[in-house]
Image 1 (cartoon, rainbow, N blue to C red):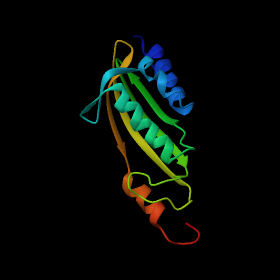
Image 2 (cartoon, rainbow, N blue to C red):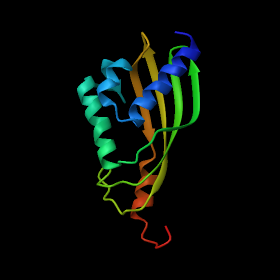
Image 3 (tube, rainbow, N blue to C red):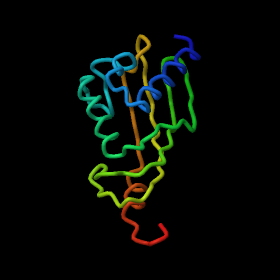
Image 4 (cartoon, helix red, strand yellow):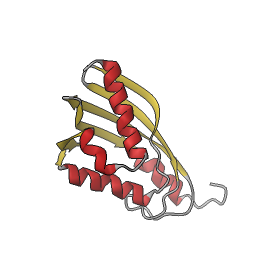
Length: 135
């Protein structure tokens, strides 16, 4: 797949996530998909993304950096959001947080086959547990 077409596919995938169209994920993601070395069915992957959207209703995937090379995509995604419920085991404070995800994807036949994702959980924990009033 040409790199420009793959970039368009990836942007379509993020639009699908931002619009909470989780039922459309099979259009963008293989079943099964490998996420951080764990093989997930498409239903399990949908549940993972639904959980994040439930915990953080205003979760929005915003591209900061995007590199497409061959069948691989690398992206730095920024999130500015407010957890409504416990997020990855950290209780909500009502406070907005900002964090980034560094994620790499390997595509096969125009759909995501493998994902490697890294989120700075220490930065999130620090923002959610900082007790200063102006934090």
